[in-house]
Image 1 (tube, rainbow, N blue to C red):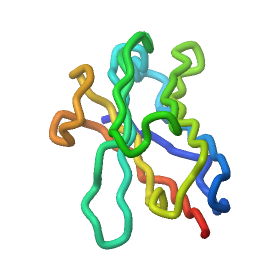
Image 2: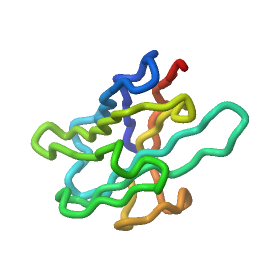
Image 3: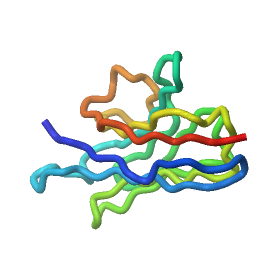
Image 4: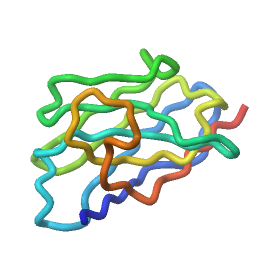
Length: 125
């Protein structure tokens, strides 16, 4: 199974920005064949959907709380998924995970297969 590696997390002040990246560790994984998504899990809460992007980047879907602030994108040539996060709020504090799916525009966690280990994002007030 593919191994996904997230990076780019850190500590930022309210209103700041971060860009997360996610890339497969193996050379044989066909990155462009998969829908990709971002999820997050805050302390004491269940993991929740953040955003997803289709195979060629032509369609994106966001949870309401991040619309207008976060942008999901992908570079298939670099086999990398991104999440640009602007205007960060303390409630965005969470571990952020990337994951693969065969289904477009889904927020259903059960329809995602491979997951990364996560990267911590902390937004201070």
